Image 1 (cartoon, helix red, strand yellow):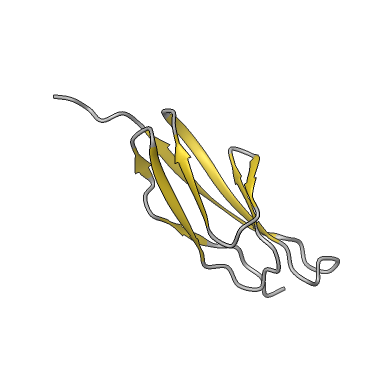
Image 2 (cartoon, rainbow, N blue to C red):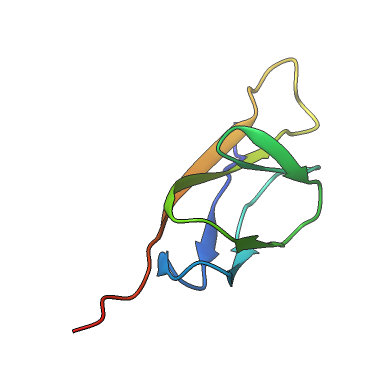
Length: 88
């Protein structure tokens, strides 16, 4: 199977209310599903998400192929940390 699911994130540590842009760099996928903490969010090639609350979030991309019966869907996960700025 020659499919892979990969993406880059515009940031991995942000403050609440900021948007992260995810650029899909996958190969071999015919469809794309984006999840944040296991909850489906989009079926677009690229993805962006506004993180409103502090916490640790896992963003996952799943990319099935035409040969779905032979090859399992590829997946990739990136962790995003949302935290308030420290005021000294």
